[in-house]
Length: 258
Ligand code: PGA
Image (cartoon, rainbow, N blue to C red; front, side):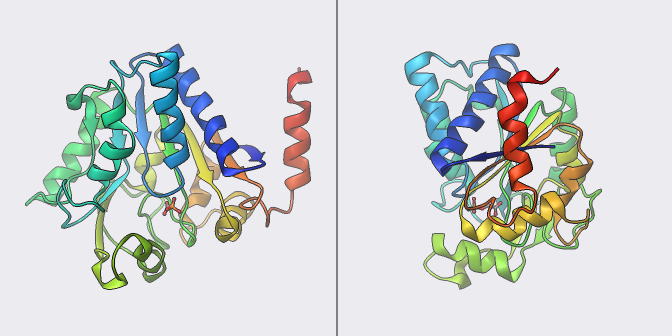
């Protein structure tokens, strides 16, 4: 695992955007896995800037989002369809048909989840997956005790996640209880994974994901099993890491590495 600690959330976002841009330059038809929430907003802003000012091209890119709330229509301001459209897709030149976001309103979730998994495989698999982390250590909506082999499915949100996400709704009662989410097993099949985290409230989850045991209680810890994972975190989110000095030392020495 590569652990990169940045001074600020802004630096974290720019660093992640550089990795995405490098991936697209190397493979213009890359398949990206995308996340929602507050954390990737700076990354999307920087990708939009790179598109507008430097011509970063998304015309051949395909995307798969991690999750969606069950019951929210695409037009609902808190749906992840709406979030992705507003914060990224409407500002870049990605063809509509290349965008995949789990449906929160299908009448056959089982069939939809199976199709979503099939579609990822049909398009060659995810080259680069962006994930955030919940304060309870979740990746996507894989809440504590989610199987580390899980696939795209309906998941009940944890109370902690509902409380965390209530800030986007008028009240906690309005946060949907169910979500459709890629599984941990689905995420682990991506060729490269970047986990982003910023802020003090993520410090314990980040430390447990990186330095704790691999456990379904912290589904982000499953990333320890992945051969090409980067954690890009700001100083606050790195605050509980025991080996923080070592990670910074590695980064400083990197240019001289054999
Ligand atoms: P956040 O959510 O970026 O809004 O903190 C992260 C997550 O729950 O994965």
